[in-house]
Length: 107
Image 1: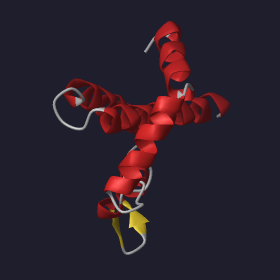
Image 2: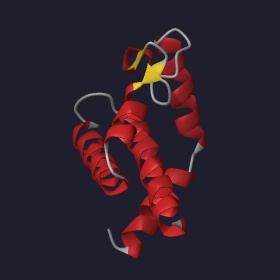
Image 3: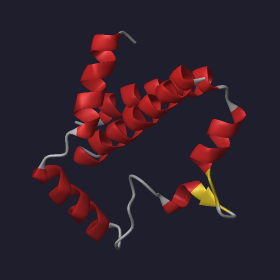
Image 4: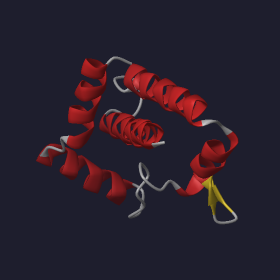
């Protein structure tokens, strides 16, 4: 991903309009107070989150590809499935992508 694209994703991921806050709260209410974007219980078994197992199994470059694929997936389907929740998931994966990128640059 080029720097301009990365900056666009970073700006998008870091922007959090108040409408998104409202949607996040509505999502938590719909799921009984569970944060389905940042800590979905159906992806945790025996105290291990699936994302942590995936990250441990992949190289940093492979994990970056995994994040990019999920960003595409959630962007692709947001109009047809979970709307704002899927956009929030895109932001979550964009943040993971940036974190991994920054870690690679520090090495």
